Amino acid sequence: MNAKLDRHAEQLGALGHPARLGILRHVVQAGEEGAAAGEIQSHLDIPPSTLSHHLERLTSTGLLHSRRSGTFIYYAADFVALRALTTYLWEDCCKRGKGCC
Image (cartoon, rainbow, N blue to C red; front, side, top):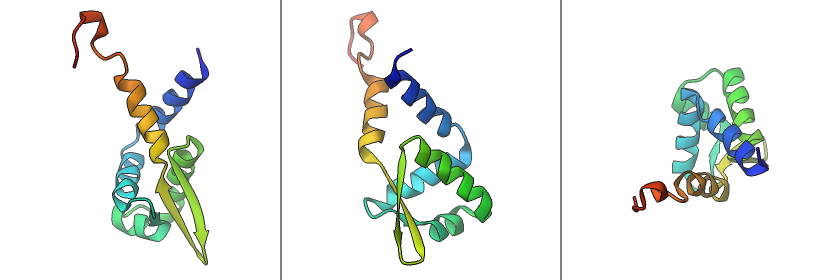
């Protein structure tokens, strides 16, 4: 397998959990500034230790990035990585049927 396929498989695996999908959706909706960990935790009603685990998984696959501001940690979507993932899923769509999706 090639590196791109491996990376996308890891990213899709990270999205295969309802909590992580909810986290990503909330962070995407927050825009480029992202959302503070406490805000994400409150919005999704996830225990802090569980949230930390899910945020680490999304960050390690490159779908999120974090930044510290004072005592807060903000998580933002990596829109370039998300675009690359969705582009990979759609590239060459329907080519075997000679059609276009």
